[in-house]
Amino acid sequence: MSFVFCPLFSGSSGNALYVGADDTHLLVDAGMPLKAILAALDGLGVAPQNLRGILVTHEHSDHIRAAGALSRKFNLPVYANEGTWQAMADKLGEVAPRNQRVFTTGQDFYVENLGVAPFAIPHDAAEPVGLALHARGRKVAVATDLGHIQSGWMRAVSGADLLLLEANYDLNMLENSRYPTVLKQRIRGRKGHLSNEDCGKALCALAQSGVRTCVLGHLSRENNLPELAYQTVRDALLAQDVPCGAGFRLDLAWRDRVGERYVIA
Image 1 (cartoon, rainbow, N blue to C red):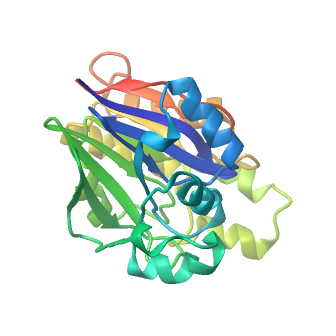
Image 2 (image 1 turned 60 degrees about the vertical axis):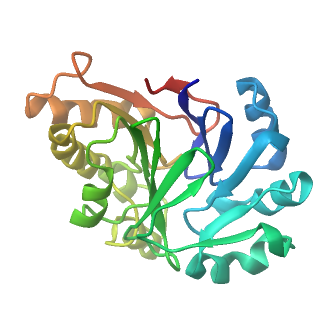
């Protein structure tokens, strides 16, 4: 019996995360093609018909692309807050009324053995959330699509046994990219995404709160490199005397393949 987390895909081109506790299996977001998500679940040994639902953080396509199809094919509940439901209803296709589950941001709920605590995040979506998931006395938190460091979401993820945290872009790569100015402004704006540098700053504080494993996620395909994100965040931690590998583990989630399977003991 265990509490398991695995980033199936995490990046600007699509996001889907698996979390399971005992016989309760959930997806956090489903922003990749259906075929890719099914193949990833098969590799984990999780039958899609055994999922207990899909938790949706917000309505952008890289988080909901296959959510409607999964719900229809396997009769899965889709959990989202009211603002997200209103913004994504016409993007999902038909979802059976019995599978339209509405939660309240800031109010904890349970899906069988998994406790779910949705918390507000600063992003340019209708009502975006991060999630803290609880099982067996342990905590896994997911915080991506973060426009800036903010005390609210920092408190929500503090002390997590495992944290998936956004390291979306390198500022120099973004500034020198071919993106139009308006898109660059959106990405680095207060409701955009978290840079490698700001991820490092946040993680230095979060390490002091008790976070011991951090997986860097939601990396941009165009404006970041895995090794650059890792090195930038690692350097920030070392500068604050947080030794990676000795009491603190820093890892990467991957945009185009299944990441590590973590068992939170």
